[in-house]
Length: 391
Image 1 (cartoon, helix red, strand yellow):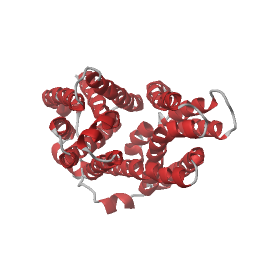
Image 2 (cartoon, helix red, strand yellow):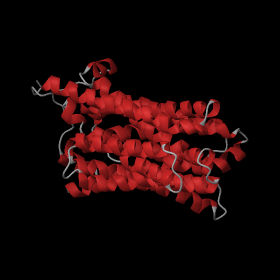
Image 3 (spheres, helix red, strand yellow):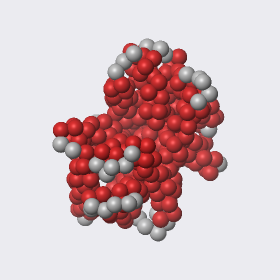
Image 4 (cartoon, helix red, strand yellow):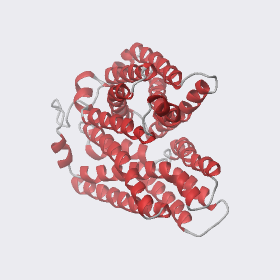
């Protein structure tokens, strides 16, 4: 039964990744139909991000009250409804409206499932869980492409994903008894008293919380900035054609997905802290390769290494949260971590866009290096705070 529940959790994360890359692949068709500037994709993305931040901050309260199984089921149902709304919408304002439940659903399921796996499963499952997200994010554009290449409108791509999400909602609904059999939601403190949902101020006041939030902010900003601007960096600075640059930039995400599959096996020998440090070292090597005046396949190789380095950091930071802050506080801390992640991915890539526009895109490795150094410093500060608290 426990293996069946784990399979359901993996399916849930594939489902979480499926719609994440749809907007980018469908937008060239969508903005023409809506008669809006191409930049309006950013408005949709910001609405979705705002929803995910709000629901992530509320995840502790919701999960304590309803349980992970119910929160996940309802969240996936909201996402399915929102995607169906996308598929029947022919108005940009309505699209923005449907983006609200989409963001709210995605944030809740992300925070709830991450905490559940961190509490109940080994580190390797957290790595493989996020590998499943990569599988979903990779499949999404193919489903959209399947619709578009067969003469169907972009709406059908969203409808196909909505149907998949609906089927998953039914699977989650029938799996609810499995969540109850697996065990509690860490609703008690160490002295046996019922734990209450923490406020944002209380969470930030926990020793080490500020450090882990900045760590997560910087990591997610680094990953998203590298993924968004890699193609432009290769084309505008390294001299690749636009088509070749796009193909090589995809290697970054392949590096993350394959790296997370491999990280699951490495966690059998290495701790979460060792995996995070190893990932940071590999990212640094990739950035150094980008900075060096090397020709040939050096730049694409650097991007692959950055992807490999990114692979273990996100899942291992999440998985180590209960150990660092206690099982009674882990859902609250992970919820705020998710919120900081979405803020980082929303703010920092556009900030580099301004740098690229007003200075040069060649500064991408320097920008990534700064984020990496702050991330590594904050992670070490977190470990120092946790060690002092234990003593």
